[in-house]
Figure 1 (spheres, rainbow, N blue to C red):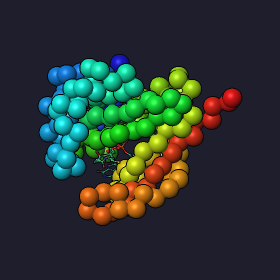
Figure 2: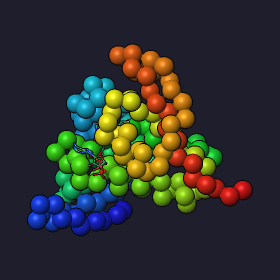
Figure 3: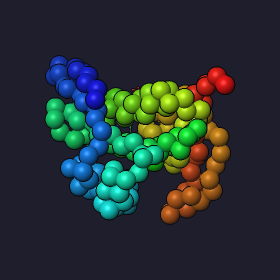
Length: 162
Ligand SMILES: CC(C)(COP(=O)(O)OP(=O)(O)OC[C@H]1O[C@@H](n2cnc3c(N)ncnc32)[C@H](O)[C@@H]1OP(=O)(O)O)[C@@H](O)C(=O)NCCC(=O)NCCS
């Protein structure tokens, strides 16, 4: 669990990032539907939390309210971000970056070689975030999304010395 106190427009906010638990499923499900128009589904989220040893899911809380989520899979020696979002009223506050950093920290602890994700090229803010974190474009997945848009496959090389 990570706590950060941040000042925005003169207000102090407590930002906590903690492991996702079963009580977070309705929040993640509703927000995924709202933001992406689809969700992994409540049952899949339940199974991921309860039974998948490879998965690492986190929730960001701002002053105790759920504000964002990240889901990742550690398929050693690599890892993958499955999804990340910040609820719209909390965007642009650095929460997306903190959620990503948590996963990157685990990658470093576990000597992960490469962390990957897929993103729509039109997703300006997400592309900006990943570029800031030094992800590089490695491939294009043609017509990856249901509406026909391509996905950009991005990777962060973690510089593991073998
Ligand atoms: C992409 C997303 C997770 C970023 O989360 P966030 O908490 O807003 O991101 P951060 O605050 O860490 O900002 C990262 C950069 O993007 C900019 N940014 C993000 N959202 C912004 C907004 N709404 N308006 C202006 N700038 C924004 C930030 O200013 C920051 O750049 P800076 O450091 O130069 O200021 C969030 O916009 C989101 O949930 N989008 C919808 C879901 C989505 O697209 N997920 C990614 C799927 S691949």
